[in-house]
Image (cartoon, rainbow, N blue to C red; front, side):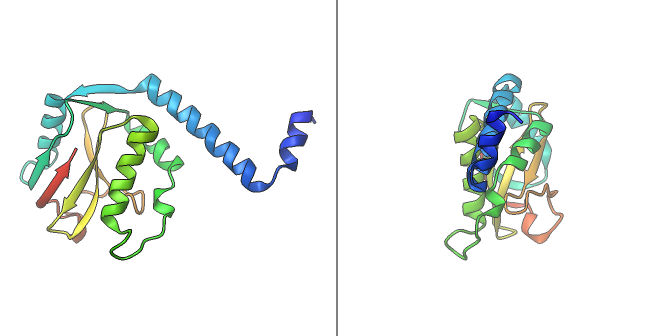
Length: 165
């Protein structure tokens, strides 16, 4: 056994976990930098508009270019992320806080601005909308790491509300 392995085995579990967590973050960050694709606003607008064309959602685009990744890389980032493990607290840290936290975390940690916030008045819920590098769009539930479809449940009505992207 090498000396480094012996030293690592003697470290407390939380330190080993932190080293692993940071190592995975660095590797994901490098992959995002290598594989990212910047989409112009016109492509993002067309993709989001085609996602659910009959929906009565108001769309607010905040940038002129959107940094995107593939769905596969996004799913790896989701597995690394721990937003779904945060405690839910009624009216203090509930669905709108989860959706904002997730979108902001990916913006800060990975430079991705292609994760939007959906405030769904029809479903009385908030969640995320993601644009991938191939122009496809999906909904994302940051509290459970699920990918619901519009209308698949009451809280994902996606008929009346606002999307900030």
